[in-house]
Amino acid sequence: MSKLDNNLLENSIAQLLAFSNGEKISVRKGKVTEEVQGKKRNFVETIELQVTIKNHDPKKDKRFSGTFQLPLAARPNLKVCVLGNEIHYTAAKEAGIETRNVEDLKKFNRNKKEVKRRLVSKFDVFMASSTLLKKIPRLMGGPVLQRANKFPVMISPSDNLVTKVDTVKRTIKWQLKKVFCLNASVANVSMTPEEIKTQIVMAVNFLVSLQKKNWQNIKVVYIKSTMGPSFCLFL
Image (cartoon, rainbow, N blue to C red; front, side):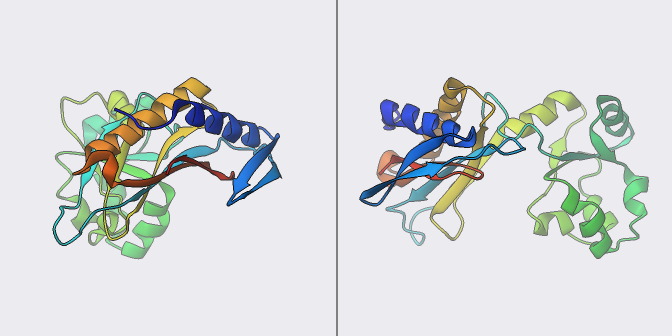
């Protein structure tokens, strides 16, 4: 069950959207409330969840990791590249999805610097046919995608490529590494307040479910748009 205060959540979303729409809002900074002038940007701002974990002993407690599919894609314009076999390469081309095949990868001549500059840096997410997955590091001259934290999502022969891409865009990942501050993109300012609320609640509840002591492991929860101030949802 969510411990997020419904009124606080709805008010925070309203303030966040007002700021992103260029309106003036009141923001609390410590014990002082200040008026801040918003600004409408020429791109769709992403809404990010920022959470701090507490009561977690790295020596005793396992580091958690989990993925969850939200109803809507927080970043619909996420740049995806399919590293495909003949079937998936053709399907990606037909669907208007960026794609590369084995011959394209061979053109890099295993030059890692060129792979990083001309391929890895241009895309947010990579997907690869299951038959190519093990060959990719060799074709790229090393584990370039792993080191960039962009290891490909596997595409199986039975997968519908368009559906798989949509699923990847809607998937968020919570993973505890060395720091207790986590963040994930869960919505964007083009969504309705109700859609944003649903995305936030589902993402937070999933994170809580990964904790040993559930809400007792959550210290603070904030939401923030790309260019806007942060709003506290749980403290």
